[in-house]
Length: 371
Ligand SMILES: CC(=O)SCCNC(=O)CCNC(=O)[C@H](O)C(C)(C)COP(=O)(O)OP(=O)(O)OC[C@H]1O[C@@H](n2cnc3c(N)ncnc32)[C@H](O)[C@@H]1OP(=O)(O)O
Ligand SMILES: O=C([O-])CC(=O)C(=O)O
Image (cartoon, rainbow, N blue to C red; front, side, top):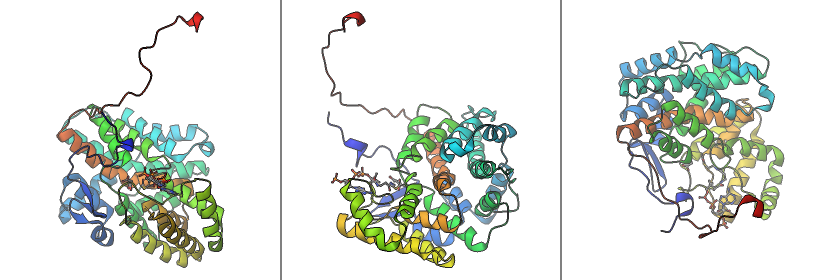
């Protein structure tokens, strides 16, 4: 019984939500390029959950359902206010708050399809409210209540900044949300499926997925990309510092991917946005530095940029705190986690692989006083 470290190349389930074939990403068969250029995030949510694009009235009713569910139970806001948010990472706060939401949902453990759909809407709707409430509370401000007349991306920025966003900001966030929504059997999605395959509830599935996304080898990389860019400081220093990091056997954040070999098809969209937004805000150095790193890594290590790389300079240009980058990823990816959870429930079997035992055998038990 030989194992494959990290389950590389193992097909662990069938799915008809998203696919990566020859470095091309599709959601339900639609190219990510078309969706990034043309879709609203709400349209993508509908696509992932229903496996078809919505008609106009269906899209409007999903938007309405989400708008109606965005507010948080007062207890969750009070809880966020009750601890020292300056020392808490927002992904940890999000993980805890989502788990808490389950305590205030009477349907938490109701496993019927319609109830699961209602819970999916509630989670999708409430995640941006949690992230933005966290951001406001730690600045000593009151959370801004969601508005029913705004779309998802617009509402997110409105709750974050307390004022209506410019259309270019809304477009950027909408595109980032579309690009991050789903990605086949990545680590956090797999985590959510393993969790609910025990027939545990949706809140448990999403809480565990947030925990998996938080790590620096996965969604947590985007925050660390910005940390690295800040440390480098100037484009001219980029290559030398990257060489030094590689010599110290450090991983370069935002580079490499388990599945993509030639390149991550999402990165080019984020790269284009980064070029545009950094120029508009007079901060082109972040883009220039990123390009130098990307080119060096491609040439020297054959490693392409992944989705996390250029998203860092995009979010930075929008004035977003760096530790909110991964929570924004979660606000988008929850749509994919929910699609996978619903798909898992539809055709469930417990997920339980084996481990090859490589430890000692035949040991003799000795009483504690004799050890
Ligand atoms: C949304 C997402 O989750 S996208 C991924 C986000 N994560 C990151 O950006 C973190 C940096 N990247 C990495 O750590 C990796 O490329 C991963 C985790 C994404 C993929 O990991 P794996 O498929 O397990 O590749 P693994 O870590 O085994 O790397 C293979 C080889 O490439 C090297 N390598 C891979 N990525 C990097 C990197 N970013 N920087 C430097 N070297 C790297 C490894 O050191 C290893 O070299 P070796 O064979 O000489 O030991
Ligand atoms: O698929 C992966 O391993 C990681 C990734 O790019 C994602 O989750 O978007």
